[in-house]
Image (cartoon, rainbow, N blue to C red):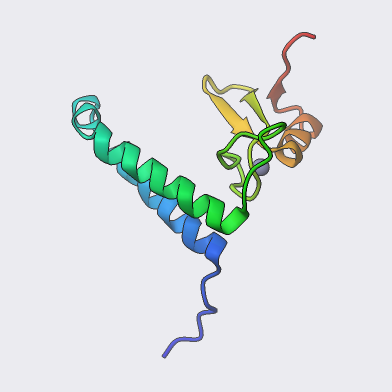
Amino acid sequence: MTNTPPMTRKQALDAFFDLRDAYLRLLSYEQYQQQTDTLTRTRDALDVFTRLVYGPHDPGRQYSVLCERCRRRYAERIVQEKDKSTLIMCCTPCITALQRDHQLVEEDA
Ligand SMILES: [Zn+2]
């Protein structure tokens, strides 16, 4: 018997996202191309569980996917972190933290 506290639903969902991310990193481009149906079904399944855990997103101001930094809220904007080439989908608290730490490439308004 261990005294590990029971996993929360959010932690359980995190574990599945982590597993998917780790799997994607292992795939070559050719393997990725051969498995698009499975990967699409997996993404759809994660969307279903995301809805169950976090409830519906607000289509007026949120994307239907979780923030790629914290995975604790739905993403609200697509931003670019300094010194990184890829864009990420981010929630407002994470954007605020990135701005505060000057880690965000701000688009010119
Ligand atoms: Zn976030």
